[in-house]
Length: 614
Image (cartoon, rainbow, N blue to C red; front, top):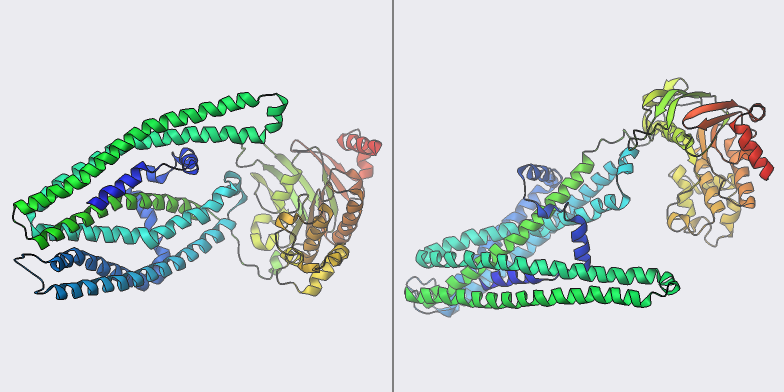
């Protein structure tokens, strides 16, 4: 019983940290622990046991060890009472030494069973969660781009890390604690009723009253704790904003204004804290009075009915065990709510329809593309912006080995065409055809394996140069990597690094210049050897020398394949076989450079502006 009230007290009066408060404010509405457990939520949670199924034998043995160790724990108070001795009408042992030996054996057995229970539960949990992580990641990476437009990267990362960590705690600790505490509560009350039903009724009448009073009292303390942390958080916000904007503070001579702001926040926090301190002091006194009052009442009642000393000691210890388990159930319940919420978040990801992605295999002959592309009456808007049409019934043809340029103002739909070619999205209406075959009739993986893109903003993984180039063809030989680097005009600068191909590029390639990153991206495309090459503003952000080297590499790469070039610098696409001018989702001009400059249109206007400026 004493343990019970001490646990309640520590849980209620604990002041949350500033981080706790901020997280509480941000997530209070979505916190699964703030809502009762529903049957539908439990049904969803049981889906997780599908991943435990391969390890059921170990899990069941662990449950057996848990059950035995919990029962052994129930024997402890009775054996301790026998050890103390005293008058007893039903002694288990004739001598204290026998009781002591039995107590030691029970403790050793409980320790051994607890060890194996923990080891088995941890083993099952780690294997289960590894499988779950792999399943979720594999499904997540196959989801369509629409899904990622609606989710934040931090949120998705949290699903795989924080939510699964909650499940790890549930399988390893929470589930075992729930079973153990239920065994102690049910078994303990049964033993108490057998020992003395009159004293048991008396104890059960006192315990709930004390716990309810403690919870009600604690609500006031928690309210003041939250208010204190709110003011502390506001005070820290003043410090953070002031230091971040110290130039403006100095420039406007507002040092004393900020000092006064900080003083107001800290004084308010102190005032609320002192008011809450009075409640905590009263609550501490109440807990002390309640704990010892309850213990004295139980002992007094036991003596009054003539209970033997050994039985009375056992009774008090069983009462303490039961009280501690009841208090612990509140924490277990909260953890279960969090786990159910985490499970629902993970299952939301698994329930999202994924793209039809298959492991890479050789491309079937009927799915090989020669490079002919046709857009027929294609209309498209992004799923998140259905009111804004990006492409409006556009049609054009690109023939094998042609170099076609897409030009026009920003927002005209150029990059959207690239996304549709890669089937990152599908058209809302109309169709895209490769060699006369509908794009959606070609398996997605096989289609994308025949296309390559060199983007304006190159993304490099944080590994080595070799790993980044090999991303175009996993498993490529060192000779193939070197040949690709040479063709991309990258071999010269790679050789200058002490580690050569094994040079670490850093996160997003931060240790390389823009031109170097572009040439590695080109080498990656060279290694892929695509039939259709897409260049999305590949030289727009480079200096003159880097642009020359990159453009030379691109010219080599475009030879012998269909190339689609998005460009703002018209000087790079004057030799294109066809130039398509897009504006506000429509094709407004189409032809060669020579044909378009003869027209009084947008291309001529853009060309005159750029070349006159040059």
